[in-house]
Length: 139
Image (cartoon, rainbow, N blue to C red; front, side, top):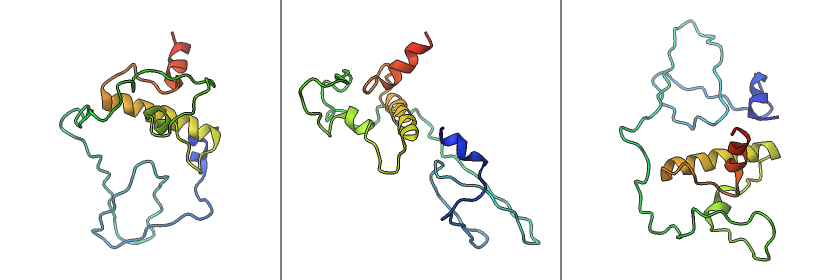
């Protein structure tokens, strides 16, 4: 099961409706589950979705000097007798959240690693071999 499997649902317990006056500007993360409802008024209404698009590639635009020298190196994914540090970039990218179920966390780790690759402009970066394992399946 993945996040796509909930796409067939129209309503869920605890959902919140946003009702606002004309001219309201609502800014939200596109990853939040959202949908449109029926227009039950007698007035035509419009909704514009705007995706912010920078004019330059958003890679390596910050100070990288605080990244450790070994941040591109894979760490052992099996027990080697050392404690893993929580501030290591691989630990940060593969940190689970309390609301994750197993499949969601797997997809989230993959997306985080892909995003980090994009930010570093480095297609070979991986954390704990999450993408390497997938990419090796397709070769």
